[in-house]
Image (tube, rainbow, N blue to C red):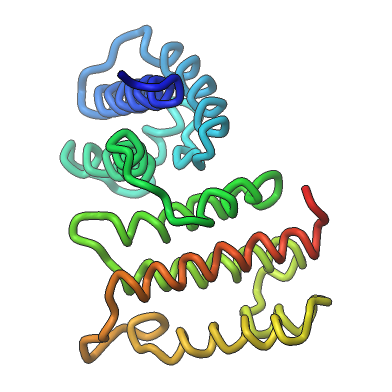
Length: 235
């Protein structure tokens, strides 16, 4: 029997699938007069439900008309292009919901870090979800998981310092944190930067597996929790 939390996730999954059907119908020649109103009602409810479940809302199209304009702007000339875009839009959230419903455990500190990504840090949640999903997707992508883990730390610091164009190394020089932790973060950034796949594209296979990806994910989680606490207080 499913728990109440699992039932909420099942309901959330159905609403996501419902809004995807509306989006696809509207831009593939199956429009009806009621779709725009149905979409807006579902969109705003889904926005609240995703936030409550700890997920980012990947859909920035607040109306079907806005979505149609986006398709034209991006030159999505075929029905297949538009269907693919809509499927990929919610792919990370749906993958994680499926994992949770299979009762696959989360990495130890991932959820705690995600809970810190609120208010101005909410946009980082999408990047943070990708860091985890790259490990557990089929096939897994450990290299990109590590990249997103370290980039999540960088994104958090960019938001908290208001320095959107600085690198992690530059940002660490701006914040008042323990010097040993500062060095540790800088060394981790340097270590990952030296791996060809992270910054410049690999020319040789890297000896990276699930354990390395999980290590960097947990390291990033602890770092996010620490930085949010030190720079914004225990909020």
